[in-house]
Length: 238
Image (cartoon, rainbow, N blue to C red; front, side):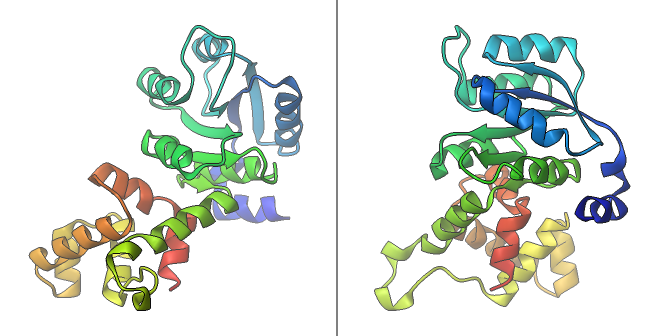
């Protein structure tokens, strides 16, 4: 039923999606294949167990999404971020979902900043793999619940050392939340200024403060953070 409702909301999800899955653990690879097989519109066109195999199958089999482990062993080619960057350079049209045994926030943030569309911990509910695929196909970013919660906790604790204990956690004003929502819609600073009857300078100042509160160091990192629907939903619900 849930899948049918999603497809009604987004007809794109009814179209066939070709996927390549890469993991160096055969049992997990088989498990992912079984999970994806439960959705008729998802088709695995190839699998890989090494970084070398990933690039070989990417050359041979066109796909929309690559579900890929973060760490591979026993391969001459590098894994991790260098692997992701190379995939992004050679196959910019492919959307990457990282399925990782690493549960540290740094790995999740680094991969998302590197341009991947989804991050799922291997110790989470494996149905998250299907959720990630559907969200990514809809043009959204996806992180599993535990990763999203860790990101939110990190955001809410930013700046705590710079304030007195009575000030508590980082909070967002109604105007800042409004700015977040408008930026998410793709509006420019000038358009936001006109829409909210504020000066461009004021809107720009709000954006700079938001970047600081969100712990982002560049525009690229800032807009990657804004594209995480789950994370932003938690913030705008304050």
